[in-house]
Length: 352
Image (cartoon, rainbow, N blue to C red; front, side, top):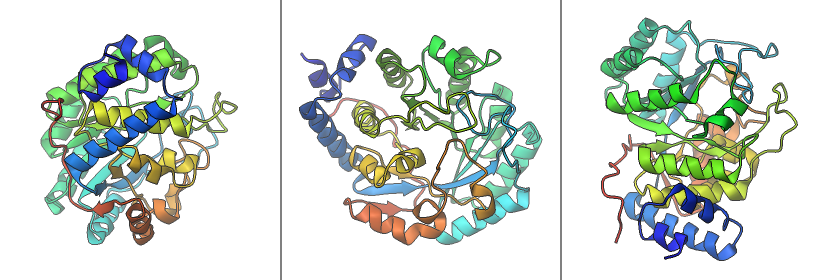
């Protein structure tokens, strides 16, 4: 059985087989078959629904110095900010008024936001908006910290693994960071009952097809409830400023592979995909994605949460552009829904 047939039949692939699949990424017929099956599975499991999440980028301070990131510790050109608890709650209040029922608190690894401060914020949000899901995306913590966040009411946690290859991890991160700790964090989050999101950048510096094959194999085995995956886009104040951005076509190919591999996964059409090219997020939806995350952050701070260059931060990306976003999503046969949209559970991956 050819590797594409094996994938389409819902069977597990080896790392070597994922590599063979990736080597066919430029064949139009292969891309068509994957895209059509990804769309079929997305419609089968979710209908035309596209879930929206209200993104609140609450701090751009970070103790890490990841080589690719615009808000890394060593970048002295960043205008740093932290939202106060009341500013965060104002974002939630406006989001709830607009209809959002999932909030995503995302920030750098900022030590000022201690466990105690985070627990207070989580408990307050969940107390005021018990009908809402709360997702955290605040990086690597110890298991006890994650436990406190879970007990305070956090439902989901996004922590991209970035790469499943230890050597490639070393290309992207300084020595004080380790892939082993990143993977332990993901394991801890799953054990604590979070709905967990992992993911990686497409064509990040030093990435080869064998690295992507390892990423896909990891996702197949780990089976996260969410996968955050978008193209690498360089930032002008990092060591990778001159590196090319990741490919739109390869990103779309991988979205389809992940949808087929994990039929019930929550799969965002990321801001990075929208930044890479006009209509990028809509193309992502047609490739198997089913989540979009408009920005609820205060408008005055959006440009300062600059992970990469030219990030879209106004118009349809922002919560104020919901009507325009609804129209663009509708144009590709999808409809925005405001419900929590919990992952149905990955259960049996085989499909009729």
